[in-house]
Image (cartoon, rainbow, N blue to C red; front, side, top):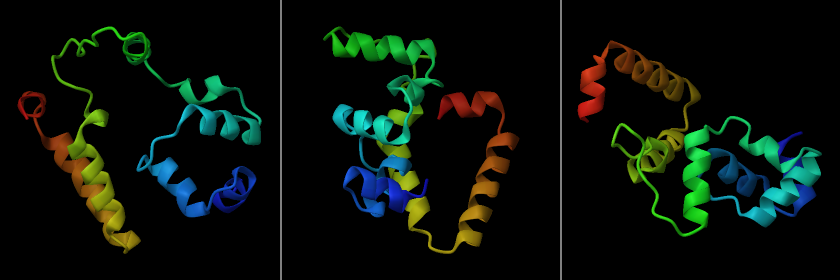
Amino acid sequence: MSQQKLGEAIGLTFQQVQKYERGANRVGSSRMFELARVLDVPISYFFEEMGADTAARGRQHAMGHAVELPDSGEADPMTKRETLELVRAYYKITDAKVRKRLFEMTKALAAASPASDRRSK
């Protein structure tokens, strides 16, 4: 289903759907329910790849309990402001070829970086 058709089905523009898809906007529970209904999937479909530790922290947070960091002592990089800013900047690059080259370069740099260097940043 295209973003245009999905947007029409839930009363949004395709640009708003894109923001959800990219993670620029947070998806509320009522919107997620509507998406599941339109896509004819159970709500659990959106959580199939969620790790057990993430699910446990989410339940703790929902019940008002303190949420512990993962064993590594570092916050999940997907929750960092830096990650969101990086993704937003990446998608502001209008030339798809330049974006692709930046993506490939970033993967190569990460692969060449020793594991100890990645943990210290």
